[in-house]
Amino acid sequence: MLVARRTARLARYLSTESVSSQSPDSSPPPPQSRTQTARPQARSSLTPRKPDPSTSSSPSIPGSTSNSSIPLRLPRDFGRNQLLSVPSSTRALLEEIVGTFHSPIRYAFAYGSGVFEQEGSSKLEKDKKPMLDFIFAVSHPEHWHSINLAQNPSHYALHARLLGSDFVGRVQNWGPAAVWFNPFVPVCGVNIKYGVISVDNLCTDLLTWNSLYVAGRMHKPLRIIKDDARVRLTQQVNLTSAIRTALLTLPETFEERQLYERIAALSYNGDLRMALPFENRSKISNIVNAQTPQFRDLYHRLVVGLPGVEWQEGSTTIKQDGSPLTRAAHVRKLPSELRNRIDIRFANRPGIPSKDSDESGYWAHVAADASLPEIIEAEVNQTVRYSSTIQSLKGLVTAGVGTSIRYTGRKIAKYWQGNKPQ
Image 1 (cartoon, one colour):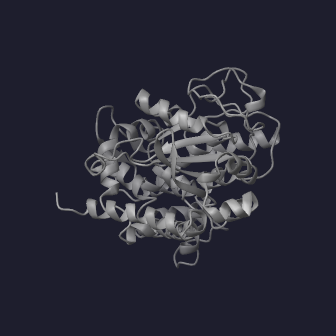
Image 2 (cartoon, rainbow, N blue to C red):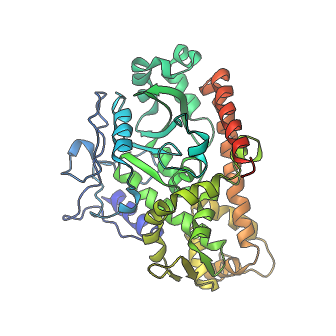
């Protein structure tokens, strides 16, 4: 009970929506996957239904390894902004693909140009379907890979098949991102790339931004295929954190498009692939141009729920209170890893009161400092650069050299396409 109360309190503090852990009239999130069986899963639906005791997710503090038998129940409409629509044919295909896996998946989403159109991608891939990208969050990665290796050995490189699930699980946990990717996997007539991460590591990244690898991907529109209450809760915090971070780097009056571009840039500007000829230079604008309605569905409700923000219905202009007091409230609720990095930058600056003696005054001085936007961008970029570099190097081990070269070749082709004169 104590753990459930702490989770609810944490969500209320960091997010903009209320949450209760034991509300008698609240309904569970959309269907959650069974975690105690390896049988094939039925196609999931995003329509809430009666709770199944065997599928309730744990309300443990996100990122911890301790579990509780108390089910986490969210209010009926909590996080509905996360449920973005896609064409019926796309939805059916995504659910069919995830349904082919026998290993138990607690949370799954699809993202990228194969799910939501990106400006420029239709011309580039007119005669060739893009690879569909998935992330699977699972309870026990080694167990998951053991079942998946038995069912789908061809999804893994030869050395991973020979060394087994223990090796795969250990390599998955290398580096801050803690993801194992299998690319170029043919399923249901299309090629997919899927990453596997533990629910604990996913929720830790969503809350703290310790790597921003998966959390950054989840700042942009995605399609949830299997939902989980714990992930939905921490994802709402992640989205709100992205807004707060963007607001701290934007002027007092700005356009809706600027907000979305700033949010999308959080996980791209520091990425190693953006510094090398591996990524389309126009990727951020391509995403926002084509997906503005999805960004609005995802963020509008959260933006207007923040203090000091004014966004009139039907307008594309947003105004925010630029006073040190309001900005300090945003800074204090930033993800812990980013906030700690900012704290280190300002801790010994002259003219700023000690945080121990005057914490409110300390954060007010930090929030009013003209260099804060630049520091935020630098620290976010550093976090993303480190995790993306380690993950890219890890790809040589997870996918193998040949597959990594093939994947890099596709990225280089997209880079040159994105830099062609229009």
